[in-house]
Amino acid sequence: MTRDRKQDPPGDDRVSVARNPRATHDYHILETWETGIVLSGTEVKSLRQGKASIKEAFGLVRGGEVWLEGMHITPYEQGNRYNHEPVRARKLLLHRREIERLIGATEKKGFALVPLELYFKRGRAKVALALGKGKKVHDRREDIKRRIADREMARAMKVRA
Image 1 (cartoon, rainbow, N blue to C red):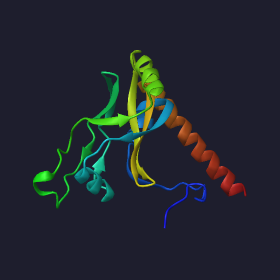
Image 2 (cartoon, helix red, strand yellow):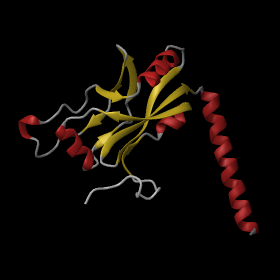
Image 3 (cartoon, one colour):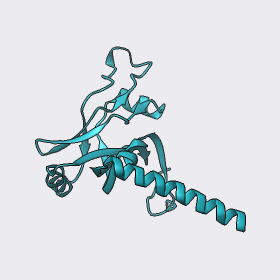
């Protein structure tokens, strides 16, 4: 039986593999993109088992292409000699216009490409890539104060109701 995209329900059919919770803590997220990623066979098998980390990962624009550096994918247990390197540069798949936009944005001081999440969508590995501006210490403190105030307000509303 073949899948017809027109008949698929509009729900979110993403299967998350790895998330980067520090990204929103350390950066103001300005814009996000969904990108494909070039992987080898054993990397995909290891990702399906959920063995990946993007906490130290970052994006680079090099030679007109976007690369993801620092992402760790644990070697596949049954991979024997055909296994992959755990940490290597992996190419991200974006449209030419998106890459040109990223080139201009990342040349500015304080901006970085940060992966937010690694997931499977319709059987394909995808990376949610964001353009982020680094937060200062006082920005982080303000965010913490705002979160605490929101939490206390929610508790007060819950008690009233």
